[in-house]
Image (cartoon, rainbow, N blue to C red; front, side, top):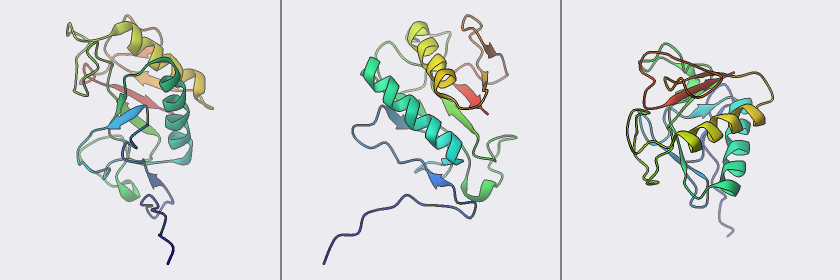
Length: 155
């Protein structure tokens, strides 16, 4: 009997859950709730994440952290946003490569790599993006309360 190929969970909108960090992926996952429950992405967003991940893996061995996108069916989980699958939280890069949160105010924060990653999101996007992040040294980002330790990308 052939083995079944696992398929990512899909919600009523037809949005798939972001694969939960395949071993050779250029990203890792985090967020609340965990286990991918808040990582259902619109096809445009999941395509963008995969494109950025492939480009990032070509230039840096560190993985970037992908956080909240949307819960299944777009319900409320304590965010005013993150309901349409068109927004994603991403952690800034750390100099030490650890897969932990880092504030742009920390000595472990890698400004240059984070700026490159944000520019990859812009370059790979098929539609204009808004990026919220409180490190004002990165061009094209807008500050927003609560965004010292992650940037928020949305179509």
